[in-house]
Length: 157
Image 1 (cartoon, rainbow, N blue to C red):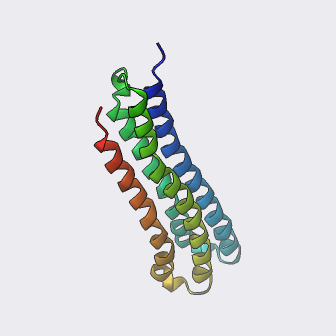
Image 2: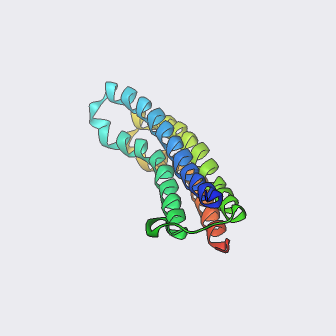
Image 3: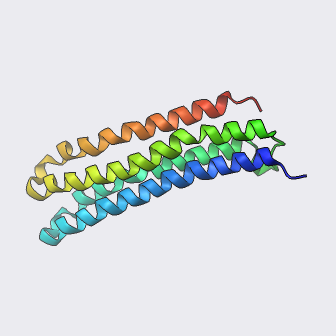
């Protein structure tokens, strides 16, 4: 018999990892386009721009972490648990904070990093100041991950 609960849990793991990863991919792309513009003027700023471009990539890592936690929690590597639909839907629901916060903060962090590239272009000595703006966006990805983990581990399996 098909295990709908397990299917919903796997959809949750996939959404958490997939949407957060998509946000990171978009954010890194946005920041990378801005970095290329800065490098066209001064190739010596590669290290600084690379650091700013890498910042939006963390949401994908958070989503992947959540996805692995779900797979471990449902014992997928040991054959998988027999979950009822309610348990599966609760796991799916626990994916929403990291999925949504990861997606939107990844894109937002990419935009903030792209803006910070302007600081690097004109005042490379202000890298630490430039990093503050995209780092502020990171807070919401971390909060989304925290909420997803807390929800996941309160579900009775």
